[in-house]
Image 1 (tube, protein in one colour):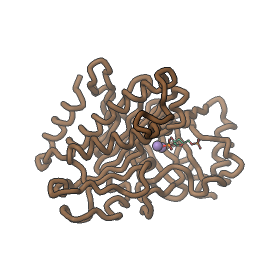
Image 2: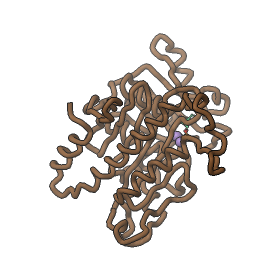
Image 3: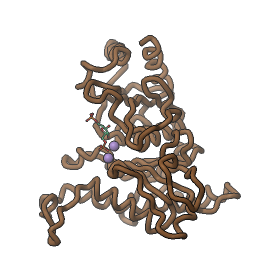
Length: 328
Ligand code: AHG
Ligand code: MN
Ligand code: MN
């Protein structure tokens, strides 16, 4: 079985113009994912080990795991000098990593949700990391600009997620299908366990936080009502950790729905580092990803942390929802 490293080498050979810079970005993400995995796996031991959440010997407060994951990914990418900037859920503004001439040679920026589903950490439920890679728009050798990060999902060079689940799996696409690599924890190597992932033609699962039903748009209510009237066919599964919900649906078929509601009038999930990367993966696996009105990857971003409604999964199932949305 190929390792992720071997897969990247053979993939790189297919592109004559490749400089190896892209593979280096994935290598760095892989390294950070392994360290985060190690920490996540210890999370339930925290109370036994002790002072997590309190102050450490230097008087600094101990970090929450999502901030820790954020710093780890930044370190892994910055130390290897292979991306020029990062935007993260855990940082208000984008981070320009260019501090000297050497950094200025990189053409890639990364957008990341370092720990997705972090509220599940305390109860030992699967969490993930989501990432997106873009080419900067401003010239190499100049300071980064907001436009380097505010790009449409269609401009993604690569996107992926890591699911820290019963096994840890690294799933990514660079626009030629989706591949999944499972970590062998004994030796710290990711193996190509799930080549060319494709969504089943249709599915029977819908994943949604229905507690917000009262203030969902009428079209979403109608779609849900229709599913319930067909209860022999449909079932619900909702973990509350987007990466986990998406991963299950990717293999078993189904749709993930996060509509707008009164509390979150434009939806909850963040367009740039949650919706777009997952949309790229889902489309590459043969599915569809939309907001209330358009294809997710065609939304023109205006803000780093902007939220969007998000519906994705099997083509057929999303098309039924689209009919409802069109009818209003
Ligand atoms: P994060 O932990 O990165 O803030 O993301 C949480 C997200 C996502 O993982 C999940 O699908 C969604 O929040 C759950 O929201 P509800 O609790 O509103 O259902
Ligand atoms: Mn998230
Ligand atoms: Mn997060």
